[in-house]
Image (cartoon, rainbow, N blue to C red):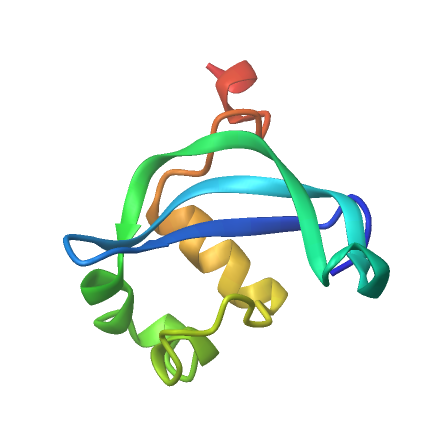
Length: 100
């Protein structure tokens, strides 16, 4: 993860598994700092994307998240990013609000 990358923030608690926010990397991974990446919320998904719904979408077949749910970080290709944002109606701060 690199500075300014956009990332999905995914809830994986016992009650819900879903993409809820988009965040940006504000501080890159650093071994000296305990190996953490600092992120800042960019905006909420207009419609949170539930894991079950994403798994049922043919356009998301093969997404790494479906194989290893416990990973804290999985790569998201550009086509998967666009598909999830499209299904979820985008996210606050994506510029779509300005097009009304």
